[in-house]
Image 1 (cartoon, rainbow, N blue to C red):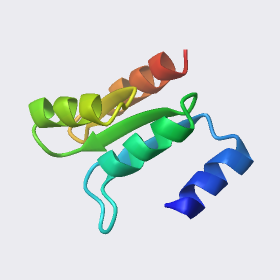
Image 2: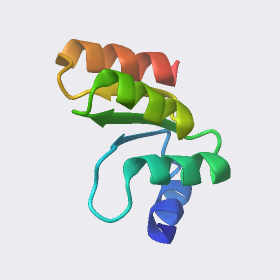
Image 3: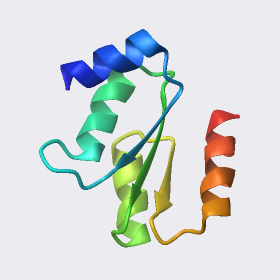
Image 4: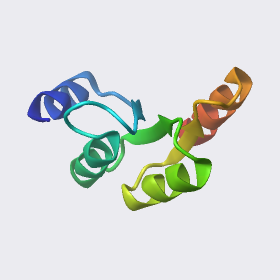
Length: 85
């Protein structure tokens, strides 16, 4: 987790797209940790879990938005643009 934080801070990353279900540290936990320390970092969570659960997980972890893996690519692009402003 410390390596992720260092990399994002040093490289001035503007957007992180993270899967919710990852081995080791879940994307929701990574998101919550990063939003607490890097509030300007935009984070979109994605997953193939039911959309209702994905929306709840995104809200609870302070993500800026969420995308279902079943979403078409043009919707991914629209959401990324909306999050980045």
